[in-house]
Length: 244
Ligand code: GLP
Image (cartoon, rainbow, N blue to C red):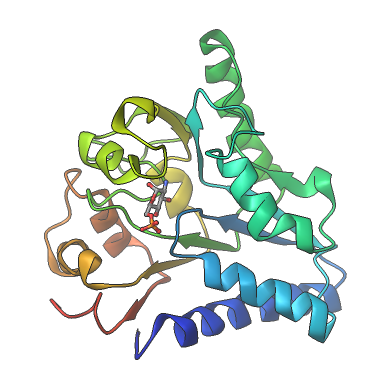
């Protein structure tokens, strides 16, 4: 779906999330959301916060799982995805802290394998992801599933692509400060979500969007795996859709 601008597109995504939450509330059930970071979903979170404040939307029946976190990373750091989520969403809504899950970038390498397995298990125990929200990186990564990630990959520690590190350099005030690695849900984890919504704004994303939607399915562009997903929606502004 192509929208004139990213604000309207973000409102439509927020409304879809809110209606899932309300529908589950009506049934006395939980809604399970997979969440993303980066600049792309910020307006969706702003809109959800507005709905909480002005329309009484409650998040008490919501469980969230974030896609990824840099490794190593202190959750209190200004660069952490923990901090990002607190600032853009969780500090402003009534979600129960125990229902929030973000990969822990502070574990030792020996702990990580077990931790990643337990992250997968927690998603399963929650009943699986109802909606997974995604942005996309210039390498075609979803979460931090860089080129070479397989269709069945699970939550794991990965090495960041050079292009991704370059894109993150200004946030970290220099390439030398960008972490080399990250913990990310796998492509397989994302593919199990009942609905996937990938958002992209701006001309800078148009080439990777064209490859993801129209290119052949390949590990070199992990977002192309979404072509296999039975219920995946790309929400784009006109600039991001301009090469389709
Ligand atoms: C990071 C995140 C991705 C995100 C991507 C794009 O690499 N791990 O989840 O999709 O950045 O970022 P932006 O939305 O700022 O373009």
